[in-house]
Image (cartoon, rainbow, N blue to C red; front, top):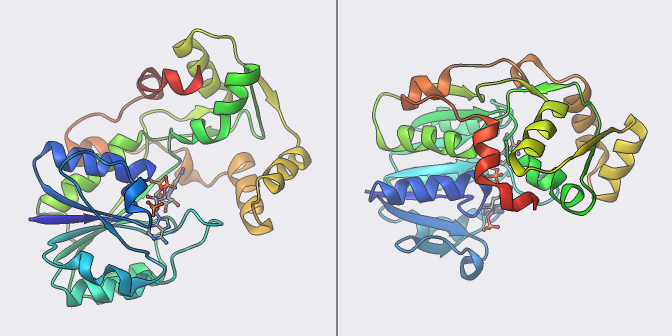
Length: 273
Ligand SMILES: NC(=O)c1ccc[n+]([C@@H]2O[C@H](COP(=O)([O-])OP(=O)(O)OC[C@H]3O[C@@H](n4cnc5c(N)ncnc54)[C@H](OP(=O)(O)O)[C@@H]3O)[C@@H](O)[C@H]2O)c1
């Protein structure tokens, strides 16, 4: 059995790879820069670009199941080529796909449903690891977090829990045609998240509420386009119910309770010091 992991160098993908390797499963990982992938020993790393699906044809040889991501890290772009990726996977004899879906129903989801592949869709809410991308620098340099929506709650999820659901769906039967929405075990406000980091690393961290205008300016400086800024403003001020409603899915699928943010912080102290 060989599992092909796309997004293998990403936040979730690294956990998927590690957990599969720990189960002694043969893993082939796709990266646009295989030399820089830095994945565990035993992983076969191959070159491939989801934006150019034909580059993946060699990677599909002998693969039984596929972990597929739906968007690229380049300018928040959706991987519109993914339906072709699904077609090529099917042609190559892949039997199963587990998809990390963001919006739940787009062209790739349709292509998978129309294929003869066995499938599971997995839709996580916000990742705990976003704390690193968003706050690492200001916590390290100034002991401060500046954000819009300090009181807004999110049922943020540990990336290893997301990966554990993928591993289960990729390796075990009984998940065909399931759509799993995943959340963490608590709906924490941004201010509470900052307090948990502060306690975990033993350092005072101030929280400063940004105005919407200030937040928009910051995101613009970071290179986000207007559409994604509007989305981030909405998620910060008035997220949909799915973002803060705690669900039991992690425990139902993996048999283990979802990890808390305090546990996540204890594993990532050095990222903030
Ligand atoms: N952050 C959140 O709160 C959140 C919440 C829900 C869903 N999501 C979604 O979850 C997915 C996975 O996120 P992540 O954080 O694990 O990933 P990530 O850390 O942002 O890394 C992106 C991964 O995608 C790969 N990739 C990007 N463009 C590619 C392309 N054209 N061809 C091949 N590989 C490509 C990169 O591989 P190489 O650079 O090695 O090629 C890298 O492994 C994303 O689709 C994201 O939108 C995120």
